[in-house]
Length: 458
Image 1 (cartoon, one colour):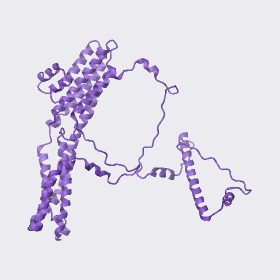
Image 2 (spheres, one colour; image 1 turned 120 degrees about the horizontal axis):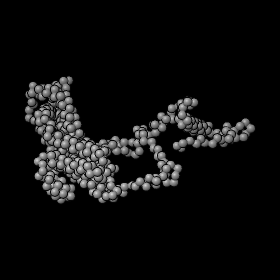
Image 3 (cartoon, helix red, strand yellow; image 1 turned 90 degrees about the vertical axis):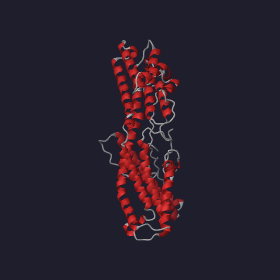
C-alpha cells in the first residue's frame, strides 16, 4: 500500500523551523533507501575495512597500481555524475508520464463520462431505466481499469486478478465474462468500451431515447475514445522497456567506480596531488567516511533510478491497487446515482435567495497567507515605507487606504515619542506638577486630548 510520511520541514512555534526536523524522513523503514541498500552497504564497508587493514598490517600496495586507481577515479567521477543525472531524469520522466495517465488524464476522462451522463442522460417517463443505463455504462468503464492494471502490474495478489474474481465481486456478469474470455484473444479490456459506444449509438437511433441526442452521443463517445487511448498507453512502458545495454552500462560504470574507491581506501590522499607523499598512518581509517558517502550518493542514486525503471513494480510504497479500483468504482456509481444525489428540480430555482433577501449569506473572509521567515518583517517593511502622495486621479479606495496607512504611521510615531518622554521623565525625576505645566497652556488649563484614530484592521 502507499506509505505516507510527515513533511520533514516541521515548525517549532509559529514561524520558526526546528533545526533537525529534516532527519525525521530517515526514520521510516518500509520503502526507504536504507532498507534497499542495507546488505550491499554492509558488504562494501566490510570490503573497505579489509583493504585498509591489509595496507596497514600486512603490506603496502604498489604505488603504480594505486596511482592507476586514483587516475581512474578522477576520470570516472565527472562522467558518472553526468551519466547518472541523465539516466535518472529519463527514467523519472517515463515513470511520471505513466502516473499522470493512470491517476490523471485517464481517470479524468472516465470521471467526465459519469459527470456528463449525470447532466445529459435522463427520462421523466422512465427514470428507473435512465438510472440503470448510467450504472451500466460506469460499470463497463471500470472493467478496463481493472483489466489493464491487472496486466501491467507485476506480482501481487489482488481482488481483480482474474475474470472469475471480477465476476465474484460483481464487476462483470457471467455473460460478460464468457465474452471477454472467448470473443477476443488480445486487448480484452477494449471490449467494455466498445459495448458502451455501441449501446449509446443504439439509443441515439431509437428516437433519442434517454436523452441521447447527436450532441450527447458525440460528447460521450469522445470521452470513451480518450479512455481507450490513455489506457492503451499504459502498455507502452511494458512493451517498450528501457534498452538493456543502457542499464548495463550505467550499472557497470557505477560499480567500477565504487570498486576503485574501495581499493583506494587508505590511500585516498592520492586523489590530491599536494598530499600524495604524506604518510597518514592510522588516519587511513577516516577513508571509511569517504567510501560511505560515495556509496550512498552513487549507489543510492542508481537504485532510485532502478526503482523507477519498473513503472509497475510491486513495492511497500507503491500504489494500492485494490483501493485505487474500489474507490473509483464507488465514485462512479455515486456520481450517476439519481437517488443518492437527489437531483434538483426546476422549481428549486425559485428557492435560491438573492443578495439582500433573507437567507442570503456571503460574508468575505480575508486572511494574510504570506509567509514570514522573520516574524513581523513584512509589517515592519509596510510601516517603514512613507505613504505615497494622494493623487486626485486615483481611485477612492486606494486613497482611503493610503490615508489609513498614514494615520497608522502617525500613531506609531506618537507612541514612540510618548515612550521617549516617559523615559526622559524617569531619568530627570520630574514631578507631576512639571508634567502638568508641560502638557498645559500658559494659564494653567490642560490641553484637550484628541480622540484616537479609528481605522480598519485594528
